[in-house]
Length: 449
Image (cartoon, rainbow, N blue to C red; front, side):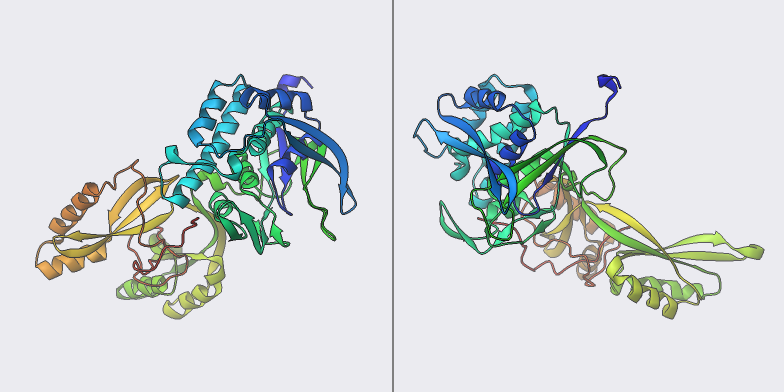
């Protein structure tokens, strides 16, 4: 086959028992990345500071490669993200190596900024700002470039449990930085101790385009990288499988899309003999019972009879209960079901005062930016009743308040009063394809450090 026509090279990273920068680097070196090339790239960023040594070892009986980062310079002061960015930008690196390394450190800077309540430009790295951690990140990016990897896929990530000692003292595992970096990714709390480090989590979540089992591929290489400890009963390793992609991926999600992905069911029933005055109560009862959405579509059935298709979008766990409710509240004698995947924008509330009345603004966001903000119509109706004003006037006023608060497309997402919960039956929303609302006064659950 002409090399120009070959399919992309995929690197599947098995992080099921944990991941750290040196472990992933060891696996890539073991898979065939040139250690001298990797060293050259590291020297371009932090010259005369570290030397890499790769040695064979074993973990729980499994052969592996251990990469040691020996310090030549003993200067291990904490460094600002701005200094590291300047070094990466000025260094003579392959373009993809530089791009990947900047992205990894950028992700670390963002999670640290959120944890400490400072701007990204003021972020001081602690452990990940040391020379050996910089070497791990630049080394992994250089190794992927040297191996010609086009796409990285990662398995479910083992994060560990218990506590660990960090720069700020003893902390629970997984540490806040790891939780922030792996938000949206599938994890497992397997084993004791810190199995996924911030460096490993940043590399996995930034470099991987998707997550899932090993993709369909023609294998061209494998590598095993060893962690520091040899744990009884568990191989403390990261594995890498390199291959030429075969076909399209299946059963994998894309956490970096910024969308909430879920498996759902659409229940449907054809109904031609129900008093039409009953339909509003049917739809209302389904929404109150936890349906994500419910709607009617006019159809013409056999013998020309007018009818409706009742469609109910439900979370898989609720399918049986909502199916029974359809049979109870309508005259249908059968319900069919279709499995679907739904991608939805994350949403949350901001409470605002509109002419002295409390109105919630539903904020849809993606990748940290506002997509749109919509006044909750029921709140607007209540405000209009309280003020004996037309609903139209209060709706326009609420939109103006949202704009005044900076809730415009492309603006940074503010602190939200609450996130939507998938199975809440409080105050169902009137928008199409909407989840039921939650108590806007509940505390948001956000990773912090």
